[in-house]
Length: 518
Ligand SMILES: [Zn+2]
Image 1 (tube, rainbow, N blue to C red):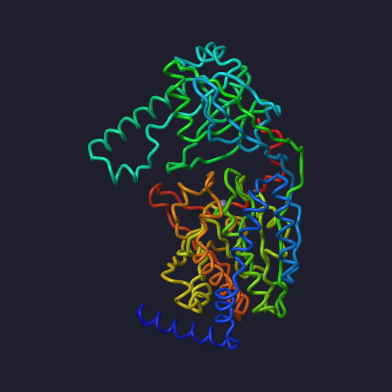
Image 2: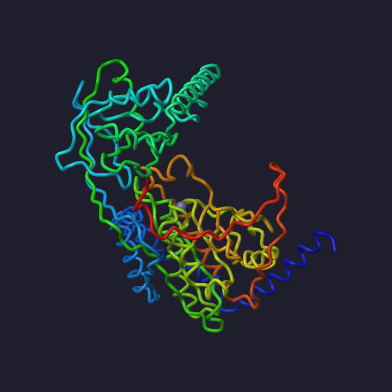
């Protein structure tokens, strides 16, 4: 049979299967429910605006888990929080950063996650740049100059405009000139930094040991107004991140000898070791309760914004899909389970622990659908190297109306996704797990781990489509007369390295985190 004929034949077969399974018009009812009665805006507000960001180990993370359980219960869905480990407990307090000299200005910035606290009345000190070393020895000697001061440790940016903006407005020559100067400054910075013998993690600790009053960094995310906000490495003194604009201001003032003096209040509470959870909810299967369709999205986030697109949107899609399924398809053939994982951001910890703790569930997995790259319409699904994924995933997708799937692309059999998000924990255990990959909406620069990852960036129309797609896939996977094949392809050679590709390994979860980070 030629390829085209095969496709036609497959098409007819899939239509027959889909129609045979959907005599009650479930698919249409899913779409209608989401179109007419979507709860996305309401739950987005409750989770993102009221509870807020969900950094593992914080009280807000625990509140989010409790909120999710009670939300599921209000929809008649069984749910619970399952402890998977412990983490360093911490609670963000007030950050207020004022420049007192050479003029008064309140600066835009925030404490990094897990940063030590200042006292309530804060710290007042002068600002200095890092000493430029000739070698590691001269660097250590010059460290006396930073004692009692706030130290600027990031390289100042060459421009506060994103490259797209230069591309649009600059002459070609000036854009090229800026890029060249930026590249040279970057090289100089890295080579000076290398001479200290320290790295981004050990530098703040060395400065702390040398008596710095605090560390000031700036991690620009290459767009207007965006910084990425990760964790602090200091143990006693505060670390704050400043906006590109205010960081550049301090840097220039320091270099010109107009030494700035700052008053920083950056409070937080160290809460010791606290338990960490996954929220698991389920709609019990009626015919094959020991086989599982798993909806998956990590629940934790960084806390520069409210984690709206990483991974609030994945979370909202899975929650809303569960609500719709419970209402329209309350007696599934297979059990439909949703996992809202804690601590994906520190290494897929919640999902890895779940896989380890529940071999009986992993053994019965029909399919896992994970979502974790922002608010856009799901545009790409890979077979992740499962040899027969085209047969089952292809037939489920065939049942999804065009108005829902748009121009979704598939890649079969694909190769195993590596590490990126929680589906990898399941693939590593041999279970057919797939990532529902979204259109970007400038995810990498503008919302991923940034201070601007907030409710207003959500595109609810796209999210509604994702709810419909996810719910229909869950329904089709649950109803499929066949259990899915787990056979994996023989992995090809990596074209670039010429080496044999390998399947991701089932690495253990880091179940006790951040407690002795040295
Ligand atoms: Zn994520």
